[in-house]
Length: 98
Image (tube, rainbow, N blue to C red):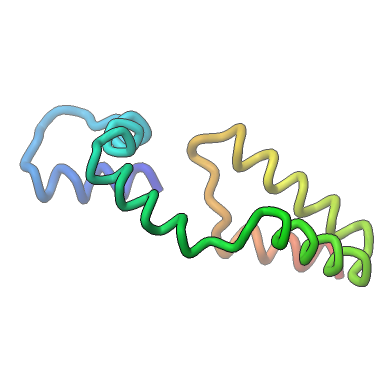
């Protein structure tokens, strides 16, 4: 994913330097325009307590295995800047849980 983003960036900005995409995105996240947009979008978010309640209801009826898998995917995504849940991951999960 980062490779594609770097290619897109260099095609637009005509830079010959190697691009550190995660660092580029982190820099953009600190810009005032981005912060204001994130704040505005967050106003539409559901409260965390409501989301947590819905998750608990879902996992109560779908089983512990799905909850464990969801927690592990969340942990991996938080630990790895380059984590992407693409088609191959979902195919593997479907096969592993069938």
